[in-house]
Image (cartoon, rainbow, N blue to C red):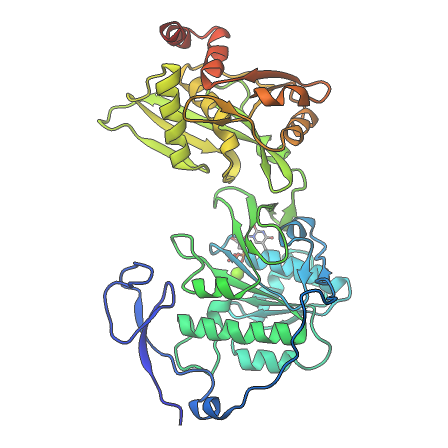
Length: 467
Ligand code: TYD
Ligand code: MG
């Protein structure tokens, strides 16, 4: 008989303890331990008696088929997965509730089914009628997707083992799945982990690609089972600002492709629309001629992306001025502010500073330093920057402006979108495409000086002090 072992499992990281305690020592979270039955999935008696099977060992140089991929037909989704779904792979798609995960995957499954592949959509959260209603709204009701509202992993696997191997199986969501090999309640870490394991085993064995939908907790982690993130081949995160229509699909981990690509979508009344030129979208609502905004020529993955950086610098009434950032790294903002204070003679200690990346985009590149500095200085001086200029460059602590990768790609995108000037690091001097004029800067002080020269009283004062 298998011995039933009760233990306390952290619902955040999956660490197990044999007594309850307030804090998980493994991940440091409080109050995350819950009692679970962690009896192994194989009964002890079988486990100990089973003799190991012999398998063939391979050499590193042997021929192997390269991962056969199946493109979904949604270019933005394929860009993020690295060219399509790999046979036998398992993908986890995380995102806030209501962000559009089910919509995205219904669309992907329908497109595959229409192309003649067997696609299965298992919903553990919604009834068949709800899924049908969504498909109708998306205009995809005629796609031959196979639907089920099921939550038992054993039933799902035994059903899907029949007939042709499905090319795509969507499990919406992994938190609602349960397997009877473990005793814990559905939704607990042990259940989620065991269910994911069973599904992963099925994917590897059958060659079907499986997409697991995962919920995200308040602090942005895929709920509970961080363990699942380690088990799957790829983790995609679907993000967006609730109030805005843009949705960004980002690869956090990908065994079969790049992790720096993003896919951009717009949520419309009839589903997600792919945005193949996101720069146009992120710049579409630009307020020309208002101070405190600068256009940053960035790179996301292999794709150039122009985005507006907005800054507000206003006198503070607080002892410690406020610094708030949306879409950029707060410590990079502190650094840029410190460099502006130390090397450009700009006093910001009496000002609140807010920085926002338009369109709900998150930028991780240090190349945005110069654009952020330009927006900040422009807001402080209440002087708009030229509407036809883009900015990029990395600032060092000494105030120098450093070159950044893929300069030519950034400049070409700027020119394509009708910009006529770029303010860039010295090293980019010879990379300008026709029709784009460059102003090169060596230091952030040059940038401030340039903005001041355009006739800004507040800054001219600063500039004189400085020189
Ligand atoms: P859904 O895919 O159900 O989100 P998730 O599975 O991530 O929880 O999408 C939910 C939201 O999307 C819902 O608020 C309605 C909106 N929506 C549209 O705006 N247009 C559409 O065509 C569809 C299907 C949904
Ligand atoms: Mg859903």
